[in-house]
Amino acid sequence: MSVKPVRKAVLPVAGFGTRVLPATKSVPKEMLTVVDRPALQYVVDEALAAGITHIVFVTGRNKGAIEDYFDRAFELEVTLDAKRKTAILDELMQTVPKAGSVSFVRQQSPLGLGHAIWCARDIIGDEPFAILLPDVLIKSEQSCLAQMMEAYDRVGGNIIAVDAVPEDKISSYGVIAPDESAAKDGRLTKMTGMVEKPAAEDAPSNLKITGRYILQPEIMALLRDQEAGAGGEIQLTDAMARMMGSQSFHAFEYAGQDYDCGSKAGYFEAVAAYAIDHPSIGDEAREIMRGLLDK
Ligand code: G1P
Image 1 (tube, rainbow, N blue to C red):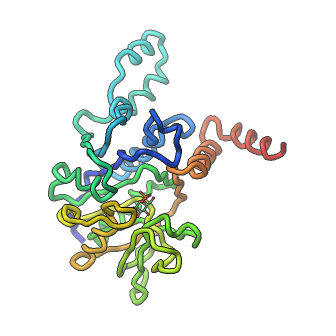
Image 2: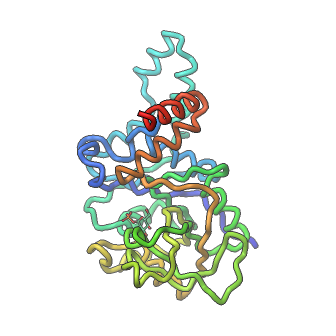
Image 3: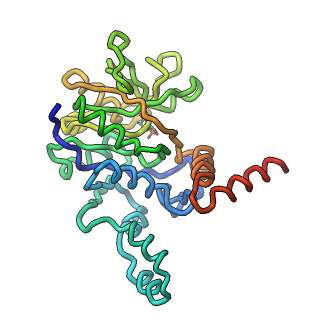
């Protein structure tokens, strides 16, 4: 199937991070450290590994640290160079994107995820694009978005990453309705609907929307006049549900484990999971954790 390639990704980073206050009072939640780099770096790496060549950050007030992080740091670079700390300097330079390959747009009011995505419309133009929600880290052998891109090359349309979620957590997520009459195609399932944050008894399945999407640009027109939904916010899920009438949507069950860094327990779990698999401190981290549990 010949499909228009996905080159751009939108990363909404305007949220307050209320679930991990006070840590996020003056530090953007996306900049909280997971072992040795900000959580956001993992998500950017996932996008780049999938072939994304332009990243649009939708930011808000007090998020300046994110712009600084993805820029050169001359004083630091000169100092490290003078001290011949070349390995650290090399690592530092890897965080700097190619000139012109990132954009920042501001979401001036916190009106919801759907509104945040709509703020990127002029940069997205009429191309299909990816969305990665940076609260969610997905640890996998092959980048989750790269897995989705392979599926997209086959079936096109719109693809949403999903994963099974326990019943007591279901009301925290968008939930999809799989098309029970259609045969599964590997990790892909056709969808008949989706709903944002349903009560467990009303949920159409146990498959939550995980925070990775490949969408067609027509979603922007739907977001423009999308009314507020769950939580009084303009929801991406509601606009996608409307677009299902005219476009194909597949749910994609990726290979990998997701961690919700927007919550205290999820953030802790992410740090622990990345620490025990870290090339230089992994063994030590395992021992530390065993020691702590034995106490
Ligand atoms: C957002 C989406 C929701 C999705 C979730 C994944 O919700 O609206 O559909 O399941 O991210 O983390 P939020 O966590 O912003 O409330």
